[in-house]
Length: 100
Image (cartoon, rainbow, N blue to C red; front, side, top):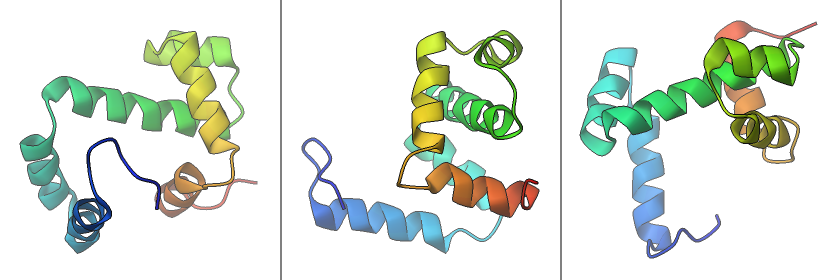
């Protein structure tokens, strides 16, 4: 796992384990509400919507217009969506099923 600025591996691992321990959307909402500001939650939600639209084949312009995301955010999400880590693809596959 990559080192986060000022956060050690043990702390990052504990956060990841906390996320894995959640059993429902309500539990996830409670934790996110405690960990993040409302704006941070909005930003995370927006990025997931951008990834959803890009995975469905929408253009950068259409995604930016529909979500209000900047072209920089759309580009960054696209890079991650198509990159080697695979987090967006994993989650979208679980939420929406395979895309044909």
